[in-house]
Every structure is written in structure tokens, then in C-alpha cells.
Figure 1: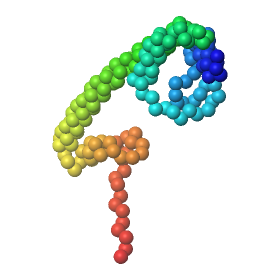
Figure 2: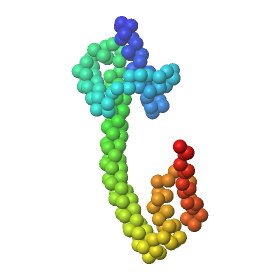
Figure 3: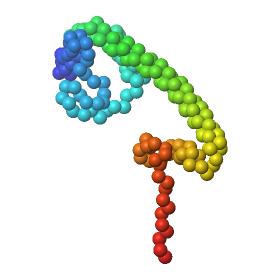
Length: 174
């Protein structure tokens, strides 16, 4: 067996052993922090589709080259079990994620509609309250401040009656 074959056999055996004993793999397909040495990996360019394709093609090629691989000391049946299990998990989680994305998109549309409905209703009722209170009255001004405070920076939790009017900025002398 060449040193490359020896390395691959050792690596795959450790992958199988770590997966079957701990229930998780310690090997990384690409990117992120390497659990083995804590070093940053910089090759995070694989898409979910590419990774699933990698797993499927790997399983097909292991079947085609089974005799050669086993002659070289690899346990192909165990390799297939590990990769198949991880492939199934990745595909299932991706399907769940896509479902959640659709649900979230639908929920976002519902939320936007509810916010729009709340704003329009409240704004219309504010206008009615201002009109009934008399536009220049203190009560009307308090109602007007509600709408103007929506976008004001800082803490807007003070009582409406305690809001201080904005003081004009003096013009600079010429």
C-alpha cells in the first residue's frame, strides 16, 4: 500500500470510528474551525447542493470500486453506512430549513399586513381624536405627538402630558 493509500485508509478508519463511537464526525468538509486543531479553514465555498452531490457520487464510486478499495484495506460497507447516514441527515435538515423559510416568508407577509392595518386604523382614529379635541388644544397636541414620536430617537416612554415642546435653534449672528 502506498503512503497515500495508507493515509486515506487511516483517515477513513478514524472517521468511521469517531462517527460510530460519538455519533458525530470530527472531520469537516470545508470551512469553519477545525475541531482537531482549532485552526481556521478558509475553503467555505461549497453549496448544499454540491455537498449532497459529493456524497451521492462518492457512494456510487465506492460501489464501483469496492473490490479495489477493500483490497487496499478500506471497509467500504462501513464507509457507505456513515456517508449515507450523514447524507440523509443533511437532505432532511435542508428540507426542514426550506419549509421554515417558506413559513417565515408567509409569516412576514402576515406581520406586515397586520402592522399596516394597525397603523392605518390608529392613524385614522388619531385624526378623529385631534379633530374632536380641537386642533390647537392641549389634548389635540398630545394626540399629534403620538404620531410624531414614532420616529424620534431616544427613550419615548414618557407620559404624553410631560412632553416638552421643541425649542427653536437661534439663528447665528451675521
